[in-house]
Image 1 (spheres, rainbow, N blue to C red):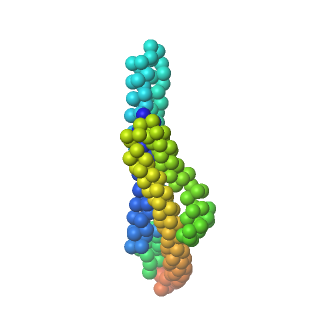
Image 2 (cartoon, rainbow, N blue to C red):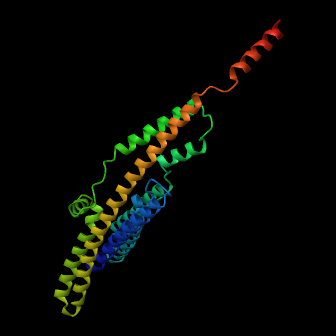
Image 3 (cartoon, helix red, strand yellow):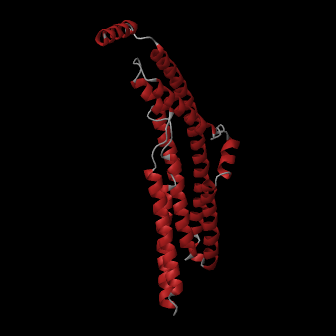
Length: 267
């Protein structure tokens, strides 16, 4: 029972690593194509593994509850375990829903696109001031996030150990190896499971390092892209303010003519 549960936990951790690595490369490809300046998939790479972990916890909880229900005379522990599994499933579903429906944050590219649409036209000063405020808010949000280090070997190793989601998969592999070793000692005919557990530990370690490196590369690329788009936003805002402050050709004559007509009508 324990080796099977450890195997299920390790498989969930492996799915977390694959989702982390895959979304990092996917967001980096979109970033290189100029499709976005913020990462949307990589920060929510935990969604699929969390859902898988909730399903695993639900099945294990229901199995445990059924054993307690049929083996014990008191049904209260079985009810408590079943309700706990359902609570875990509902909490995971709420977390996934919030992550999937959260609106996209404002970005330099969104502001740049708006300025490109109104380029060459006269824009009201109130709208330009609102864009300046949005630019300041985006700057403040970016400054709250420290820049990622370069993807050197030491930085990658430090990035792995500072984030629990990258350390847990190798630890799950080690736990699987320990439980499989105990089971193989009791049953020598299952010695091949040791090789599988060792492969699991090595695979989790390699994926943890590869995922950390991909994340650092992606974060640095995002920062560089934001710097480029911010320079464009500042330039476009400056040009738009110049156009908005230019006097309209013939405006003085039209105002004088309107005042003259108004005086004639009053006279």
